[in-house]
Image 1 (cartoon, rainbow, N blue to C red):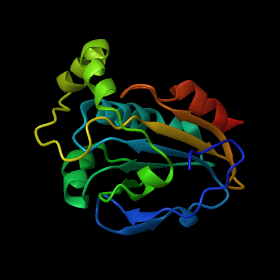
Image 2 (cartoon, rainbow, N blue to C red):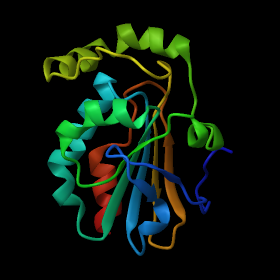
Image 3 (cartoon, rainbow, N blue to C red):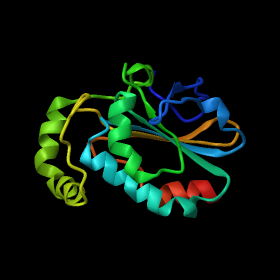
Image 4 (cartoon, one colour):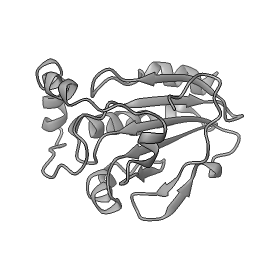
Length: 177
């Protein structure tokens, strides 16, 4: 099922990068950014996490984020622990929620991104986000979902390429209004 504005999503229950069980029902009365990413060693995904972590305080106290990767707990921890994220990073090794919410995969888009998104990929790798071990689908396209305090989807972005996320300013506007 593709996520749409007005939807109320079911509980998402997955292990965190530290191996603890997490449920989205733990987030109550807060605005939420739910993001789906590729595999844990994805350079562009790690660059995005880094950018959000650096500016997370700007999003306010009434805001939470949950990041979901197509990775095992071990692989996720190895690549994302350096971010010291103030939000849960979850491992969906079985691709359960990616399937449920119609997160797209396209190997053709992945190949085209090697050309069209090369500057972003190189910028990520220069920051040290080098995918030594790729464990997950290469062609996953990101999805960002903004959910209000009542649990209703207010905005959804299904990315058209591997770096196509909502802008930070868009997230900040949602979180602070």
